[in-house]
Image (cartoon, rainbow, N blue to C red):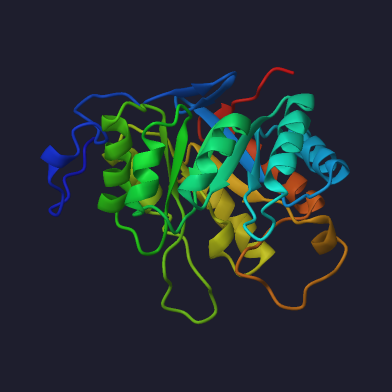
Length: 283
């Protein structure tokens, strides 16, 4: 079924919109598959040392997730090369792929070297310079939609990359502005099935920045699976956060390893009920 939105000029989105009877696109990275009835879990780690990375990677691998993600910390200019190299070695040790998130085009070279796929920061979907540089990157790209981006913005960025020769584009539903003061951000659950009908590209969800507490995160994560998401992007707490209780919730609701393991057990079961199974790499 195709959705016809009044504001959409279909002539501008010849590659990203789903044509009549067009099946879902399948993106394969090694043994991991986005789309086609498979479900992918990407888990971000804040670990700094190799020991902490190995602990997180072991937990991620045990859960059935397939990809470990790292972030570029701009305040530590000399660290990224060593950290990303270590992350790549640890990922290989535990049979995981690596994802790195970029916040500026200058970071793309190192990300191409150490990452199996690249995500752009949720605030940079409209950054034209970054999109131009991304068009020449030979890696699958994850585009995140934030509260300030429309469907047209998301699909427009995808269209640009598709038209410049990269067919491996994954869309990610991020956050929206709520009308309640109790929430920092919210998540547009309805966008997941809407986008899945509108485009043939895989659609994953990023509920972490939209939740005020762990109980809500569990519910919203499961809702993303039930809504038809092809995957999830979650975050693990750093060792320091695991070892101290926080009185006030932060805008990012990361999970302890125990909370993560329990949530992923439920996610695997729910994904099966919804007709999708975890796409796991062979060790």
